[in-house]
Length: 194
Image (cartoon, rainbow, N blue to C red; front, top):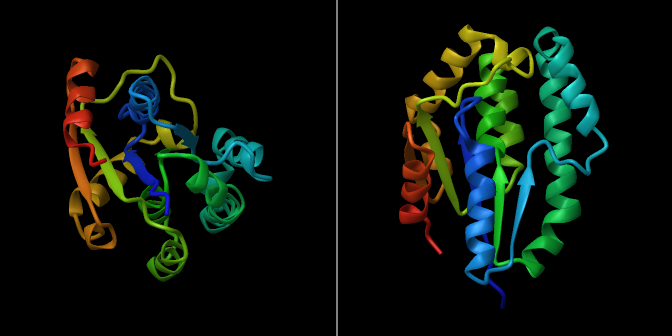
Protein backbone atom coordinates (compact mmCIF):
# COMPACT_ATOMS: atom_id res chain seq x y z
CA UNK A 1 0.00 0.00 0.00
CA UNK A 2 1.30 3.43 -0.97
CA UNK A 3 1.95 5.88 1.83
CA UNK A 4 1.31 9.55 1.21
CA UNK A 5 2.06 12.22 3.79
CA UNK A 6 -0.13 15.33 4.06
CA UNK A 7 1.41 18.36 5.69
CA UNK A 8 -0.30 21.69 6.33
CA UNK A 9 1.31 25.08 6.85
CA UNK A 10 -0.89 27.19 9.10
CA UNK A 11 -0.61 30.58 10.78
CA UNK A 12 -1.72 34.18 10.60
CA UNK A 13 -1.87 36.09 7.34
CA UNK A 14 1.60 37.14 6.15
CA UNK A 15 3.37 34.46 8.21
CA UNK A 16 5.05 33.06 5.09
CA UNK A 17 2.90 29.95 4.55
CA UNK A 18 2.75 30.21 0.78
CA UNK A 19 6.43 31.08 0.44
CA UNK A 20 7.57 28.14 2.56
CA UNK A 21 5.02 25.69 1.13
CA UNK A 22 6.34 26.40 -2.36
CA UNK A 23 9.94 26.12 -1.15
CA UNK A 24 9.12 22.78 0.47
CA UNK A 25 7.57 21.59 -2.79
CA UNK A 26 10.69 22.51 -4.75
CA UNK A 27 12.96 20.92 -2.13
CA UNK A 28 11.01 17.64 -2.17
CA UNK A 29 10.80 17.50 -5.96
CA UNK A 30 14.55 18.07 -6.26
CA UNK A 31 15.06 15.23 -3.76
CA UNK A 32 13.05 12.92 -6.05
CA UNK A 33 9.72 12.87 -4.24
CA UNK A 34 6.40 13.21 -5.98
CA UNK A 35 4.91 16.21 -4.24
CA UNK A 36 2.18 18.74 -4.89
CA UNK A 37 1.15 22.10 -3.49
CA UNK A 38 -2.50 22.79 -2.65
CA UNK A 39 -3.67 26.31 -1.85
CA UNK A 40 -6.75 26.65 0.30
CA UNK A 41 -9.26 27.65 -0.89
CA UNK A 42 -8.85 25.07 -3.64
CA UNK A 43 -8.37 26.74 -7.00
CA UNK A 44 -10.49 24.09 -8.75
CA UNK A 45 -13.52 24.48 -6.49
CA UNK A 46 -16.79 26.03 -7.58
CA UNK A 47 -16.46 28.67 -4.83
CA UNK A 48 -12.83 29.67 -5.36
CA UNK A 49 -13.48 33.02 -7.07
CA UNK A 50 -16.44 33.79 -4.80
CA UNK A 51 -14.34 33.21 -1.68
CA UNK A 52 -11.73 35.73 -2.75
CA UNK A 53 -14.35 38.17 -3.99
CA UNK A 54 -16.10 38.12 -0.60
CA UNK A 55 -12.80 38.65 1.21
CA UNK A 56 -11.89 41.60 -1.00
CA UNK A 57 -15.32 43.24 -0.73
CA UNK A 58 -15.78 42.82 3.02
CA UNK A 59 -18.80 40.54 2.63
CA UNK A 60 -16.93 37.76 4.48
CA UNK A 61 -16.87 39.85 7.66
CA UNK A 62 -20.52 40.86 7.31
CA UNK A 63 -21.71 37.26 6.81
CA UNK A 64 -19.21 35.02 8.63
CA UNK A 65 -21.47 31.94 8.83
CA UNK A 66 -22.13 31.97 5.10
CA UNK A 67 -18.50 32.67 4.33
CA UNK A 68 -17.23 29.81 6.50
CA UNK A 69 -19.87 27.60 4.89
CA UNK A 70 -18.39 28.45 1.49
CA UNK A 71 -14.91 27.65 2.81
CA UNK A 72 -16.15 24.35 4.23
CA UNK A 73 -17.82 23.30 0.96
CA UNK A 74 -14.62 24.24 -0.86
CA UNK A 75 -12.64 21.95 1.45
CA UNK A 76 -15.14 19.09 1.12
CA UNK A 77 -15.01 19.44 -2.67
CA UNK A 78 -11.24 19.01 -2.52
CA UNK A 79 -11.33 16.27 0.13
CA UNK A 80 -13.76 14.02 -1.74
CA UNK A 81 -12.98 15.11 -5.29
CA UNK A 82 -9.23 15.56 -5.72
CA UNK A 83 -7.57 14.30 -2.54
CA UNK A 84 -8.15 10.53 -3.07
CA UNK A 85 -6.38 10.58 -6.46
CA UNK A 86 -3.57 12.77 -5.11
CA UNK A 87 -3.00 10.32 -2.24
CA UNK A 88 -2.46 7.59 -4.84
CA UNK A 89 -0.17 9.66 -7.06
CA UNK A 90 1.92 11.64 -4.60
CA UNK A 91 4.42 10.98 -1.83
CA UNK A 92 3.73 14.33 -0.15
CA UNK A 93 0.80 16.74 -0.33
CA UNK A 94 1.63 20.22 0.95
CA UNK A 95 -1.41 22.21 2.00
CA UNK A 96 -1.25 25.98 2.31
CA UNK A 97 -3.87 26.26 5.09
CA UNK A 98 -6.46 23.63 5.88
CA UNK A 99 -8.98 23.24 8.66
CA UNK A 100 -7.01 24.90 11.46
CA UNK A 101 -7.30 28.23 9.64
CA UNK A 102 -11.02 27.62 9.20
CA UNK A 103 -11.30 27.14 12.95
CA UNK A 104 -9.19 30.19 13.81
CA UNK A 105 -10.85 32.63 11.42
CA UNK A 106 -14.33 31.19 11.89
CA UNK A 107 -14.22 31.58 15.66
CA UNK A 108 -12.57 35.01 15.39
CA UNK A 109 -15.39 36.27 13.17
CA UNK A 110 -18.15 35.03 15.47
CA UNK A 111 -19.15 31.68 14.00
CA UNK A 112 -20.42 29.52 16.89
CA UNK A 113 -17.87 27.04 18.23
CA UNK A 114 -20.40 24.21 17.82
CA UNK A 115 -20.62 24.88 14.07
CA UNK A 116 -16.83 25.09 13.70
CA UNK A 117 -16.41 21.81 15.63
CA UNK A 118 -18.87 19.97 13.37
CA UNK A 119 -17.19 21.25 10.20
CA UNK A 120 -13.71 20.47 11.50
CA UNK A 121 -14.63 16.92 12.50
CA UNK A 122 -15.74 16.23 8.93
CA UNK A 123 -12.37 17.18 7.45
CA UNK A 124 -9.38 14.87 7.23
CA UNK A 125 -6.46 15.90 9.38
CA UNK A 126 -2.98 16.35 7.98
CA UNK A 127 -0.21 14.06 9.20
CA UNK A 128 1.85 17.05 10.27
CA UNK A 129 0.94 20.69 10.89
CA UNK A 130 3.58 23.41 10.79
CA UNK A 131 2.33 26.42 12.74
CA UNK A 132 4.22 29.51 11.58
CA UNK A 133 4.30 32.39 14.03
CA UNK A 134 6.50 35.34 14.86
CA UNK A 135 7.75 37.89 12.36
CA UNK A 136 5.30 38.76 9.62
CA UNK A 137 6.27 39.07 5.99
CA UNK A 138 5.64 42.72 5.18
CA UNK A 139 3.25 43.50 2.33
CA UNK A 140 2.90 46.88 0.69
CA UNK A 141 -0.88 46.65 0.85
CA UNK A 142 -3.07 44.06 2.57
CA UNK A 143 -4.91 41.88 0.06
CA UNK A 144 -8.26 41.40 1.76
CA UNK A 145 -10.54 42.40 4.63
CA UNK A 146 -9.01 39.80 6.97
CA UNK A 147 -5.48 41.10 6.43
CA UNK A 148 -6.59 44.70 6.94
CA UNK A 149 -8.20 43.94 10.31
CA UNK A 150 -5.55 44.12 13.06
CA UNK A 151 -8.05 43.18 15.76
CA UNK A 152 -9.03 40.04 13.83
CA UNK A 153 -5.37 39.11 13.32
CA UNK A 154 -4.74 39.43 17.08
CA UNK A 155 -7.75 37.22 17.85
CA UNK A 156 -6.57 34.63 15.35
CA UNK A 157 -3.05 34.71 16.83
CA UNK A 158 -4.54 34.20 20.30
CA UNK A 159 -6.40 31.12 19.02
CA UNK A 160 -3.22 29.63 17.57
CA UNK A 161 -1.33 30.39 20.78
CA UNK A 162 -4.09 28.95 23.00
CA UNK A 163 -3.09 25.40 22.15
CA UNK A 164 -6.65 24.19 22.88
CA UNK A 165 -6.88 22.71 19.39
CA UNK A 166 -3.68 20.63 19.43
CA UNK A 167 -5.24 17.33 20.47
CA UNK A 168 -7.02 17.15 17.09
CA UNK A 169 -3.73 16.57 15.28
CA UNK A 170 -1.14 13.81 15.29
CA UNK A 171 1.86 16.09 14.94
CA UNK A 172 2.07 19.87 15.43
CA UNK A 173 5.38 21.62 14.96
CA UNK A 174 5.83 25.24 15.99
CA UNK A 175 8.03 27.18 13.59
CA UNK A 176 9.13 30.65 14.61
CA UNK A 177 9.30 32.87 11.53
CA UNK A 178 12.78 34.36 11.54
CA UNK A 179 13.96 37.59 9.94
CA UNK A 180 15.88 35.48 7.43
CA UNK A 181 13.46 33.27 5.46
CA UNK A 182 16.26 30.73 4.92
CA UNK A 183 16.45 30.15 8.69
CA UNK A 184 12.70 29.57 8.83
CA UNK A 185 12.86 27.12 5.93
CA UNK A 186 15.76 25.23 7.54
CA UNK A 187 13.64 24.81 10.67
CA UNK A 188 10.79 23.36 8.59
CA UNK A 189 13.13 20.90 6.87
CA UNK A 190 14.71 19.92 10.20
CA UNK A 191 11.28 19.15 11.68
CA UNK A 192 9.68 17.55 8.61
CA UNK A 193 8.63 13.94 9.36
CA UNK A 194 8.84 11.80 6.27
